[in-house]
View 1 (tube, helix red, strand yellow):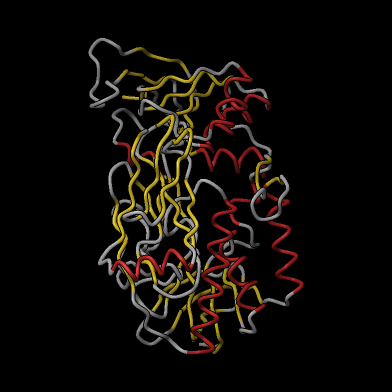
View 2 (tube, rainbow, N blue to C red):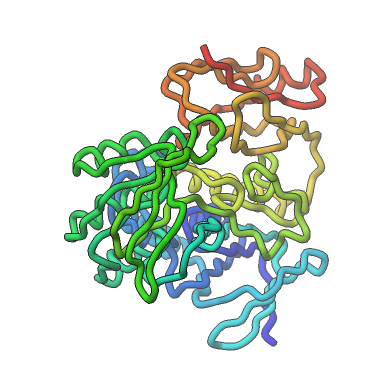
Length: 417
């Protein structure tokens, strides 16, 4: 078995991983990036629509264009990328990562590990929908790969379950490619996608969106033949009797959420039951001092730009640890208050480094006040939605307030105004 000793190892070559690897190298750390696919870029490679890059590059790019910007930076900085590699084991005590690839088994021995393994789509089996198990049921990401990378249409008449952004985008994409998209059903009383995607992907193509509605049964033997839809109460999400109706279709596209992927380290670090990802502090450190994490395996972000920025922060913090050794700093736990769902980071380090909170509200609000601690920050936000994150900058003066107050925890809440 080949052994490689190095400063930093980054696992996952998507937006967060590429950004972390570039930052580590710029900080003078010998870095290797591991990617299980044959090329870096992750899901960006198949996202041919625009809307990426406004925060990071101050211009609107497609997914492949965004990925190419970072692939170019990987090349410019002579960063070693080991693609087609599968990680078999992470041993945090020995600080070893065992992988397998075409050249055999490799043991990496880095001083710091940055996990940027992203998220996976929630599969049909998780939904517990009764019926047969016919062909024709795809997650939105798989359908996107078929259409955009393999030039293959998954069917003729499609229905989309879930109004996440990728589902909305695929409703438009399938329509443009000639499929008949009958409609989109969403169990919640509000859409799970960005407002611009509702307008551009559904309204512009006269595709109906049915809220408080879900698929309760699928029909078909070898191939999907139809689905049964049913209405649900908006408050308790209980099925409403006598609202079932059957819809003929041969394709069901699932856009029902993402699940952070942390199987490699879930036994060694603490995770958060709301984010479904690993807990990190304001330096992107996990609860294991050697392991950092950034991106959708921490919390599912709404913008790839946010994923990239957190990857950069993980790279900076990992580089500092490699150069100076692990340094303890006072951490304040961050707690969710009312109307707060996904939230990261979950520990605030009381040093001089600024960072951002990323917050998802739990319900729609025309106007809400985001409150960080007792009078540390209060910010009015318009048009709050669970599908869109709020980002709040925490500066050194805010940390001085926290120190002066002697807080044992920081409460984050949103109140409707």
